[in-house]
Amino acid sequence: MKLSLLQIHIALGDFKKNKASVLTATEKAMQEKPDVLALPEMWNVGFFPKPITTFADIDGQETRIFLSNLAKQYNVNIVGGSIANRIGDQLYNTNYTFNRQGEEIATYHKIHLFSPSKENHIFSAGDKLSTFILDGIKCAVIICYDVRFCELVRMLALEDIDLLFVPAAWPIERLAHWQILNQARAIENQFFVAAINGAGSFKNFHLGGNSMLIDPWGNILCQADENEAIITATCNLNLLTDIRTTINVFNDRKPNLYTY
View 1 (spheres, rainbow, N blue to C red):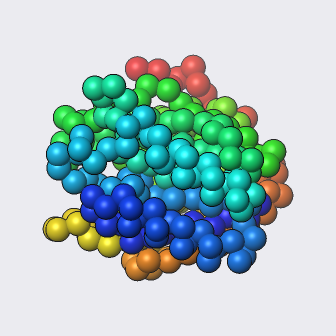
View 2: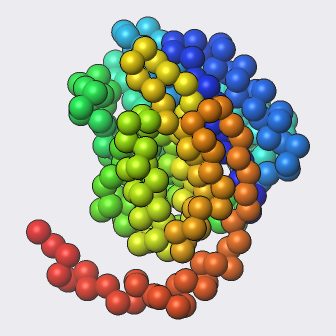
């Protein structure tokens, strides 16, 4: 499976401009004929303009139409990062995923909201995991801060996923955490991790870029710098059998001891 990670420059509060950036990046990425395109967190308006309620996409309608049409036009799967999404009187940080036919096959609302930035005061937290199939490969998505919670990711691993997508709006100040945490999640759960960050700055908030695709041995197959970029690499699924046969940590687990 070939993946292209679209590390676009995100303009704060400008959905129209950000859609144009996604369209341009998609056109360029498709020259490599990827099977999947993946976007960063809050790509529609950034993280996040205030008052966010005036910028959020209502029930994700505009986003869903846009990404569905792109998927159909290019016959490509799209893991749509996440957006500021207003459902009724609640705000969510939401991922939508589409197959090659433009069908919406998964929705995920970010579970762990980043309290240091007061995200948890403004957004509502999701309460359901999300797994889905892309071209026969079982996948899942989490969003940014979620990657710090190994319990959540292990629950997805126990669902037998082979590929985890991590769209994010990760700051450059904590870039070391970004790389280490994503590599750790790949190694300890023995699957591929596609970590997709944004590029650019919002006032005093500077996105760190460095999107990457990591194999289940923890090797970085491709990695961007902090600037706008498209990176593409192929997941060799034979590596899953290799590591799970060589070091089968799941056979050696002691789940009866892992209780509080």
